[in-house]
Image (cartoon, rainbow, N blue to C red; front, top):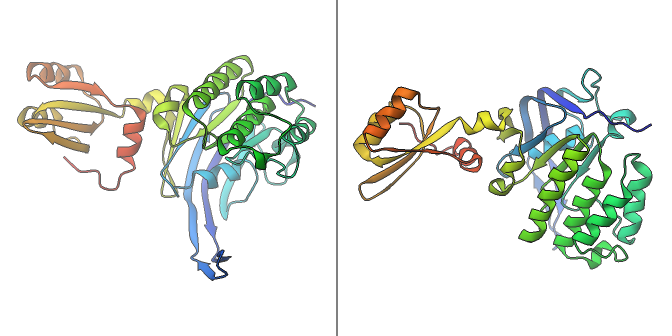
Length: 316
């Protein structure tokens, strides 16, 4: 049976702890990894039928969260449910849910000893919603020879195969975890355009984890920001954009208009100061800024993400 309704998801007070492990280095040295925490009380809701950006610094817990949604792992505590609205279930060892979820990691999870075409056939056999026409067209677009083995492809071409699998699968929950790595700029932009076009024609829920926020923020309807294992925010992208603004002008004028708001970032060049502030200005404050010769600017999602997750963010 083909699953067509987009999947949503919910995490409630999810904790993921990693036990102390051991690794053998290439030189034969055995090292011990300290125990750690991937998620620490994470709570959020993923709306079905949206493109949601998942943002976080390295080690913040993004991949840990995405792995839970795809049933690659289980939480230490808390609950995770995935599925169509009103029918969400624990994804762990749940064929109904996992058959409708596709996680694409950087590696593409290909069969390294087989031709790319063999990996594509594997996914086609596993996914009832698979579009062979889409897969063939995208491989042609990305200039990937399906007769080659993954080991004969560049890092960027392997990533392009992963992107192809994610789009051609058309799973109700499709997750791209840093899938762009190794792609050159033209290939990345082609991927973004194809993602939007296929999403419009075949609605589903798409999670997109990326460090190239400036490139992909135009795709986001919702945004999740994870910071040191906790969900810092989970909201529509437009709401996040309204969380901050910039003021540029003389120091005295800027500080007067800022009105004691929390400063996320501050820089000064000569007599001109620019500050990024949390919140928004009302009409009276905007008028005051104009009268004082202070320029009010919008703050891109990337800048807000960087400032909100920077432990060095200063107070006004």
